[in-house]
Image (cartoon, rainbow, N blue to C red; front, side, top):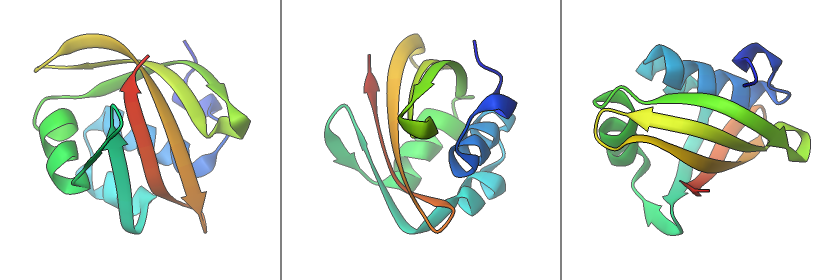
Length: 106
């Protein structure tokens, strides 16, 4: 596993650290205004999805690998709802903030 401190892209690192710390304020601070996301190819409401899949269910990411200058991750993701699963994450970063992420099962 890759420690979050070794993630290449600072905006992605901030978002992953916020998820793992269950810090909603830091998570929101890592996002660009109007940020969007998809899960398994379906567009989702970012606030609703992150509340359900991350913050109210104790989500956590253990990073297996990073590519694309740190904008693509493979992670073991776990939460209290679904348990553990291998996932992919692709990020778009604009002006130092995550403006979009796409996640799904690997």
